[in-house]
Length: 146
Image (tube, rainbow, N blue to C red; front, top):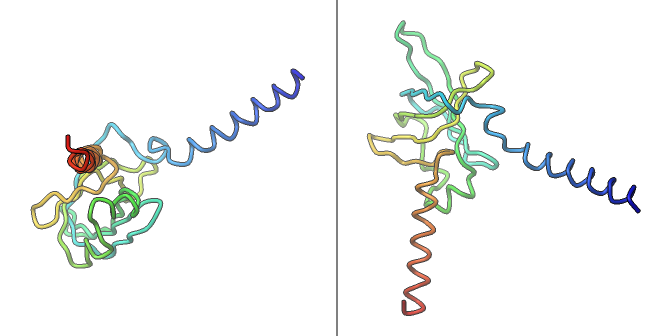
C-alpha cells in the first residue's frame, strides 16, 4: 500500500511541476530589468497563449532592427475590449517590458502606448484585471440591490 501511495505522490508531483513550468516568465525574461523601445508595427498576432507584436526600431546609428514583444493571451485581451485590429501595421508604438534572457530582440511587454495613450495589454495587467473584476462586481451588486 505504501508503494502505491508513493508512486501516486511522485506522479502527482511530476504532473504539477509540468503544469507550472508551462508559463514560467522567469525562464524566458529578466523580470527585474525594464527596457523601452519606440518603433513602427510590422505585424500584430492576436493569438494564444500570448499575443505578439512585431515592430521595427531605428537605433542611434541609423540601423533598423525588428523586435517582438509578447503580451497577454488574446482571450484575456478580448475581455479587456481588445480586437485583432487593436494594433495595426504602420502604427507607432512605445513598448515597456522585460528583455529576453537569450539576448534576442524579444521582450515581454508590460505596457504599450499607441499615439501617446497607454493601451496596456501586457503581462503586467494586474490593474486592468482588477478594474474588470470591480466593474463586474459593481454590476452584480446593483442587480442584487446593494
